Amino acid sequence: MRWSYLLAVPALIVIVVVVQLLRPIPPITMQVTAPTSFTAQGPSVNVPWPTAGQSALAISGVGLVGSSGATAPQPIASLAKMMVAYVVLQDHPLPVGQDGPTVAVTAQDVALYQSDLKSGQSVVPVAAGESLTERQMLEGLLLPSGNNIASLMAAWDAGSESAFVAKMNAEAKSLGMTNTHYADASGLSAATVSTAVDQLKVAEAAMNIQAFAETAALPQATLPVAGLVYNVDGFLGRSGIIGVKTGSTTAAGGCFVAAANATVAGKQVLVLAAVLGQGGIQPLNAALTAGESLVNSAKPLLTTVQPVAAGQVAATLTAPWAAPVHLTVASSPAFIGWNGFVGSERVTGTPSFSRSVPNGAAAGTLAVTLGQQQAALPLKTSGSINPPGLRWRLTRR
Image (tube, rainbow, N blue to C red; front, top):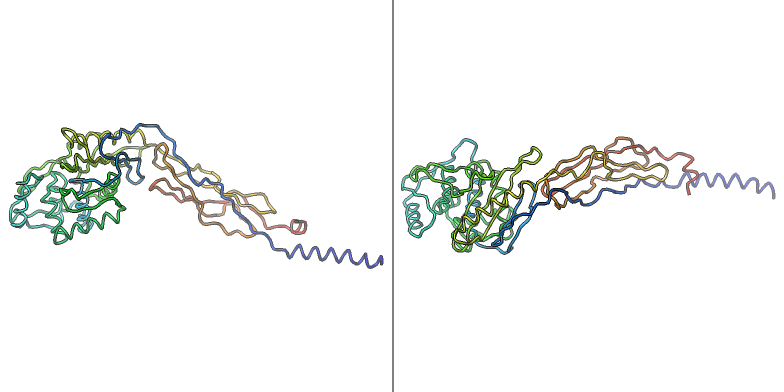
């Protein structure tokens, strides 16, 4: 009996050792510690939103600062011409320093000009046989805001104004302008409606086209028959304003989309403001004044945002047999933001370490987003995890 007992003990030990060694090694697990969101801190500035109509303020390439007033689509008058120019420049890109194709003015174009002039519309004089380059048409469209030039460009691009308007609406959809409908090219129709937020979308897209931005910034231009024409935007050059478009009808009131340069920590950004439905004795002047006020309010509002510090821990790798190892970011992105602007963080590319982790190894990324700004920060291990040793494997529970 005693011998049996003495033989059983070693056998039991062997069984325990074998069982322990054959047990699966648990995987190394990762716990994300980075917050899913963050809120930018910056100067507190009161934005002077207009008390009438609707308005919006945004930073190109960053996002919407805010909006005010009604959110229902309303007439936008000649702001529609931003989309006209955008569609034409998409279809007929205008290289730097070139004037583009030449279009001959027809008797039908002259008849339309005379009809528009008689009804008191904003027009640019034209004559049969006159030749206008694409660049000159842009100047006639965006500076004196010629309704007849909008129709001329529409017919040149799509064969008819109705076909062109369909293209305008298609582009609006592609830009995410969900509250916009174009019924004509000039914006004279009260059925051409949009919102301040939507108008910032087309303004941002158009200002990214150099030919558009250059034309919108011109105080004046010379056309073959019309001669010297002036930009209706009387605030051009004030407060850093470099465009974009004015509009005014009885149905729309005074409308203005402004673009202005601002500098944040040595980096130049484009401020965009849209104002619709301004009234009073001089509705267009009211819109210009409100747009300038919004642009000026954005400049002290903007700040540099660094949501992640170099060396910050984004996640931790844990193994039962070793001390935890952190995953850290090596750099800190610098974004443009403002007080209260909410961003997000997300760990992507989960590492597949099984039994060991080398020091300094690449281990996924931390995706940081603030508005339209994004950064993918590589994550690296800040220590190592060796494979589980024999002692741990034998003594684990």
